[in-house]
Length: 307
Image (cartoon, rainbow, N blue to C red; front, side):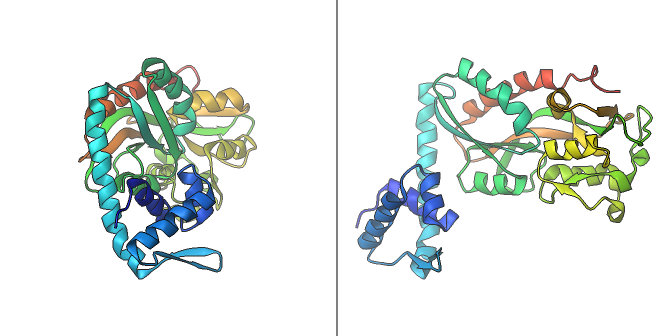
């Protein structure tokens, strides 16, 4: 009985997606090719690993038993690859980076060209998702590193500080909200505050800054993206908390917004680069962190755009 690392990788992908088509897409092969590899794997093990039920995939008892062992082997193999990759130089080969949705649209357009120019042998794969999903995928080895707001309450992760992202209030320029600059947190009208959907860390941060236990007064509206949220604000539907890194991009493409700063102490979030403490790619992550800091600095100079 011999299993290949590639088969283990395919089985792990199927166990995550529980769908042959989605699993095949995630590992960049056709669905028939993935099915053939799983069938061959079952034949070698002389055990049924998955069952199809009403269009869904379910792991059998045998599949559930071997999955932790397979993932451990894949993690060990990845650690070996990481150790050997350092001999080839900084940021060479594949790096799977996760990023939260309230940072990715603003940071990536600057970060990707910077990395291409300075590290042309880097093969960057980017995943945008909410913090809980990114943390889970970082811990199980699906991702190599994550850019998110600190802290992440998971053991076994290192957090490298990147930058401080100050918060502002966005309102409609032609709206009825009267905001005095700089404003204090208790001057924000909670019954006018619009938030991202639950699961987004910026929603929790907005509640911490503005609500202070009065969530019942909030507008019952949740957007899936910052751009959607600001379009609602520009239409006069309410106010929202806006991170500084988003100001230049969002005010450049959407008219009718007024950005008002807070008084000291200015509320903020701390953005960090997270990686597994067991990872062997510390030099790579150090270089990546410095690249993020370099491209983020101009995005955080917004004094000319705030009221």
